[in-house]
Length: 357
Ligand code: 3PG
Image (cartoon, rainbow, N blue to C red; front, side, top):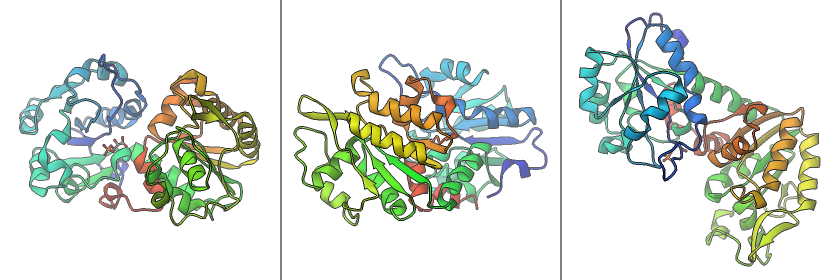
């Protein structure tokens, strides 16, 4: 993968910087979790420091448009960011460049999700180089990640470089001492990681809906707990009785629903965390958004942050939980990727990364 360090002279170069600003936004229009945005500062500031003219491109799914988020982006990025309403206005903006700008939600263009090369050509017009710094969306085969690399000289930004290095290290490091913790929902995205690591780690600890699905398939009465209807198909191919696949033994139950791991499970998990050399965690243990059911997640977070293990954490909900607990700066590496991190750890090739190599 070529990185921006390899570009010899960036002075006055027109740079399309693909970022992932796909962040949750509240009903009041406030950005609820700025981590992904703040992680773009290093590359953006470096490019601007080299004299490049930078246009940021991102998608967002929690709201239709970036238009109302621009003032918050100023604050989070520590600099003025202009707004470009459509792809056809980029070239005019670049000709009269007045500082960095963000293009409107790229997914408003039909060609984006189709990886359409004609659309990629339009998008590339006026630029000298393309930089992908959007690790979190590299698992998508979209025009601003893949087709564009056939048109412009393309490089990885610092964030993509760091993510790939940290997650490759997880895949390469020895099985002994490696502990995987998987929680949250979206079992379908987590099963490939479980499959990939069951033989390549000491243990996989489960929480959240993923644990519920496993317990359901093991014959436990789940009451009204959240489970996937198709849990049987989702979990097929995993030996649910493998002793390295550890589901909670006891729970916090409210309204006939499992909402957090119980005290004994917490103790067991904390003992395993204390012994681990490398910990990979994606997905909260329970309904952490409600403080009453956040104990399991918080205790796991505390234990990892104070252990001497190398920790690699990812997933939007996990990051929000850590942020709420004031622990975000206490981990070895926090991935901006949710789905992208899981796909990488499942051993799959990510189209956005493949396109850079
Ligand atoms: C994410 O939040 O995982 C990335 O931004 C990708 O978003 P998507 O799932 O809408 O493609």
